[in-house]
Amino acid sequence: MRPKLKFLAILTIFLTIVQVLCFLFSPNLFGSIVALFSQIDSGKDIRINILQNVGFTVPTVKAAIMWIAIIFAAIIFVGAFTSLSAAYLANYVGIMHSRNLRNQIWDHIMHFSKREIEKFTHANLITRFTTDIQRVRHSVTNILRTLITGPINMIFGLVLALLINKNLSLILIFLLFPISIILGIIAKKAIPRFRRETKYYEDISLEAQESILGVRVIKSYNLEAQQENKFQEANVGFSDLIKSNYNMLNIGLSLIFLFANLATTALLATIGFINRGKIATKQEYQDIIREINIFISYIFVMIHGVLSSTMISFNIARGIRSSKKLFEILETSPSIKFIESDKKITNGTIKFDNVSFAYYEKNVIENVSFTLKPGETLGIIGPTGSGKSTIANLINHDYETNIGNVYIDGHNIKEIDTVSLNSAITYIYQIPALISGTIKQNLLLAKQEATEEELIAATKAACAYDFINNFSKKFEHELETDAANLSGGQKQRLSIAQGLLKMPKILILDDSTSALDLKTESVVKANLKEYFKAYPLTKIIISQKISSIMDADKIIVMHHGKAEAIGTHNELLKTSQLYKEIVAVQLGGQSE
Image (cartoon, rainbow, N blue to C red):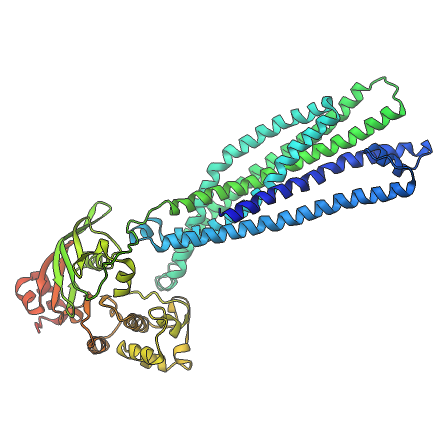
């Protein structure tokens, strides 16, 4: 927590203590007032008696009225002011702390590599970024307010009771023992339940996310009932656990109320036993009435403190659990560090030097070596899971090599300035990551200062201009979440246009034309050459289709994580059996 918020938190605690003291002063004052009603026949105005009883000596009724008004007004004003101020500050501290925490976690996640993202999973990160931060905010607010007032009510209530009557205070002390035992049992059983509650919540979020994202597939295979059963299983488990938690809490609270009523009964019985057979004077009778009222008030002040502390403790326990999950993110160091150096990308030469990469101790690629000069195109083809995209991820520095090194422009990629690396490489994925907003807003993510002419040129090169121009609002056409109102091919062409605006040194196309027909794909390939004719572009094309990579200067045939063969299309037809089989299947044996 930042210094300013720490100061405000301390101020909130101080104001809360003052508020509670104003509240605790009331039973003593009103107990005195009740006792003084029996003095009406003493010939003295009751208002004067009240003030004299609380330590004020006043000569006249007028003065008594004035002082009573001042005392009550002061108590009410101070109590109300401190209560409102403390509530405002507690909410402010909670909101600002959660905002700072959200920013801190966001910045930290932005430095995560793909390895860390995959470790936590998207659903898990979203839950932590939203629900868990909200729980932390509520916990901070509750700690500064309710969790402070509860113990203070108990402690000061007991202290003030001791000052009034030590013997009767023993009843309050004995009341704390069974309450402490009950709370201890509840806490012991509750903490593991909250862990399970969090797990159930994450399962529900994951099931909901998967069902919503895959709703078309679910409907096409008539899997609605199956998915509903999976969701209901998690939902019912979550609901049963919540009901069990609150049943346990309600039983505990009922027992606490039972002991409070028993304590009140014991108080009255004790006073009756002490004064059995005794003829009390008027003053003694007044003292007994006063003490009974005060002690009954303090019993329920303490019970209020216990109940509020117990209820809030449940929320705080959730907040602590959420805090641990958030700090788990913050304590996870990115496997790939943010680098600031003078080693920058200027041309786009790529070299793999005997590179191997293992994921969870299993080699994904092994002993891959090649060199790619500026202006050259590298095609990568192979069966699913052969390591094609891993090569691209290593070039993009999403992963780091286990053995060997990746060099760009002669610099080890681990030493290249991160901003320069990100600026020089455009990675266009098979599934475009488009956001809700206008088409123009999506394009400008790549280059915020792009002109209208640049937008038109990039979209024409990607064969996206025609369908954009058919929309009534052109570039201002609104995209839905995940661009659901565009076809797969339109999404890919828009994503390619976005990447072209960046004018990178290295362009990676990872199956990013898979949804395009052969004619459109060939036009896009020709347009890319024309678009980057001003300077040599290093291009990596990853594809399952021979037609996408057969014109490349070099082609790598990947198989089981190894570069089975490297060469041009014609060379591979002579040297690679796997490549010949792929060509035979896709082109019917056509070699050129």
